Structure formats: structure tokens, C-alpha cells
Image 1 (cartoon, one colour):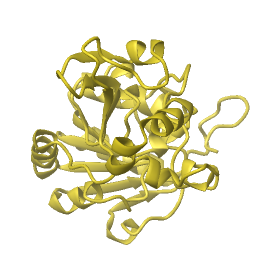
Image 2: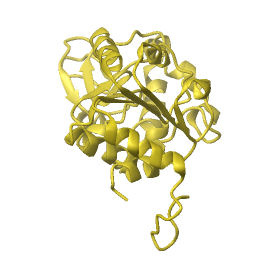
Image 3: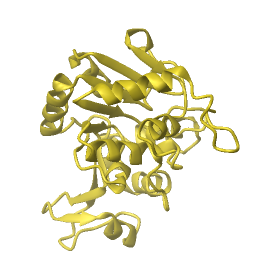
Image 4: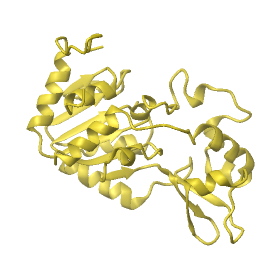
Length: 253
């Protein structure tokens, strides 16, 4: 912890200060984030000890969250989806708020996220590229009519359109491809960045994790509580709370 019980910042880690200086001197920052960004808001991740992949269900979560399973067993899919992916009452944390502040100041040009919770937008970020879609958007598989999250929540187990079609969440399931427009825009921003901050991700989910190789700017920063395969390739690595780190760097704390 960098802050004592009286709120003193006398013992700020040196790498936090280094990141703050990097942000101050950068003109084109891009943030690439994963599940760890939202865990501090109470959203469970997938791969930690308490994550979804380490809990017991009738079917493995990886199987439930596949396109094949969705098409064959929609009741079981939506039972898991409603129970584990539609988390009530979660709010943006200091990481989300800090990124929105940096965007408003003109420092941050894009947030590229693997999360589907919409918390970046809730914090005020505008330039958000959702690689894996969002629970906030839902479409009828028959007529393409759009439905919001509240409609899905108000329906029975398997949400139905007025035309009778199944309303599918606009999230990328296993076996489904990423949106090409989102991919192209994300890569374009990464190529243009002078600083790329990677946060809250194990960098093990492809193809998203592979986007990092397009970065050729000055500062490659990684903030994650655990070590990752990319640690050795980064110019700055911080193994700490992403909310506290970014909150400090954006002068929120």
C-alpha cells in the first residue's frame, strides 16, 4: 500500500512516480486492459483463484461460453450468463475514473478493453474499443432488433424478441471472431501511441493479447498484480493495485 491510514503519500513507490512522469511527458497514450481493471469494482475475473474458471458448474465455463453451447443449450447458457456475468450494482473504480480523466485532458487517446461490463463508459470514457463486446448491447438473432440490458433482465430465462427470435448478448463467445472494425481501430491506435499502458490482464487470451506486438513507441508499461509473460519486454512494470496506481497518476487520490 502506498497510502497510510492518514492519507499520507510519503511512501509512494518509485515506479508509481516514474509512471506519473511518463504520463506527464506523453502525447498519445493508449490503455489496453483486461479483467483485473474491473475486479476492484466487484466484477469477478476468469482465471484467478476465485475467478469463474475455478468455480464448479454442471458444465465448464469455457464450454458454456462457446458459440456451439449457446446454439445447443440456450437455457443453461442464460442461467450461467445471468448468474455470473450480469453483476448488479457495480460502479467504476479509480482505474476507470483515472482513464476518463486522462482522456478529458487530451493525454489518453483510446481505451482498448477485453471487458464486457461497460464500466469505462460509465466513468466517462468516450474512445472505448470493446474487443469482446458488451452486456449492454443485445440483438435479436432473427430480425436484428436492438435491445438494452434492462430488456434482457426483464425477460424470462431465455430473452425473446417480439418477433419470436432469441435475443443474444453482443458479447464474443469462444469460436466467434472479433469485430473487424474494432480490431482495425485498436491496432491503429496502438501503432500511433508513444505510450502503451497494459493493465489488469494476464496477456494469455488471444488474439487480443497479440495486439501488443504492434506497439513500437517509447514507453511500454504494465500494471498487474501478478507477473505476466510480457514483464521482461516492458520498460516499466508495476505489480500493484491498478486503481491505486492510476488514481495516483491522475491525481484522484
